[in-house]
Image 1 (cartoon, rainbow, N blue to C red):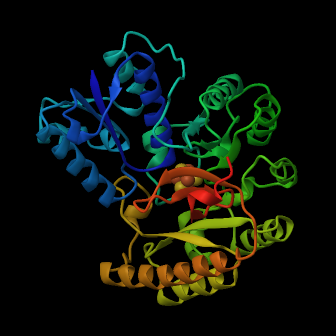
Image 2: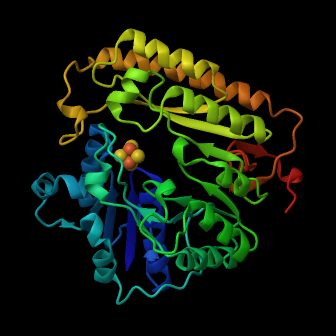
Length: 388
Ligand code: SF4
């Protein structure tokens, strides 16, 4: 069977799609592109913004045009089954907690043996699902449910499989990885899991996806010092205004955020620090936006992902008054993206003269090697400079 898997959204979706591909390949199925006339097309959708909903519907329509059997899963499938069924009643929908059924539908059982696993050189390993926080703008807890952690042995086995298959980096991912272990009985948490991974696997460098600032404590930073862990952290801020943070119900204030980020920056030489920022949250005044801009300017953050606020039906924020007009949101996003550009180029300039370990990912059209450094920079170099 030729199966095409299209994925939108977060690293959790990418991890789930990687896992699906791995299982399908191990059963002899072929993973193909949409242009290769697949028999089945699986679309792992996202619903984090209204734009993601739109992109999910667009992908579904493109997949239907190929004549493939279309199966839709992920957060948009969870949120708006009716609208998907309106596109075509032939589409099969699998909610987030039915993803395993999707697998059963295509293969006989879910037995997994990793061989040539994923088409990405840095596979994503999902360690947990769900979130119990109540950020007022976020629909994810409603779509993904409460935290549910994978047993450490399963995660370690998966990483060992990846190492045996020749992969040199894994990215630990989930909806909220700092909540890893809250549902496990033996006191295991993210720090304990990383310790176990370092102890029981041998080679792959380990990268962490997004982590909340309140989850970075002394014990975590000690384990994070281990050489195999990439010196790169993505710590969502969302706003640099106290008022907006409160309305978002984020569990920290700017003083705490700043103190922690500076501590990490001072402790780890050349670490890459990234963040997420939402602009145009309901009621965000010009002054509150300026506070965010000033705050980010002084922080040792190297890159930012900037999102204009988008109403998600059913969230607390969607019912808040004083919505910010789209043109104001666009303008604020543009100003923050300019700052992002400056910060990225300053960080790149600071690498001149340094030696970085780079994982080869692909070849450019000019035949050069493209890869990712431990501190999350895209690096292009000549083949003659390649040291396996
Ligand atoms: S921490 Fe907040 S933003 Fe992140 S998934 Fe949970 S509710 Fe959403």
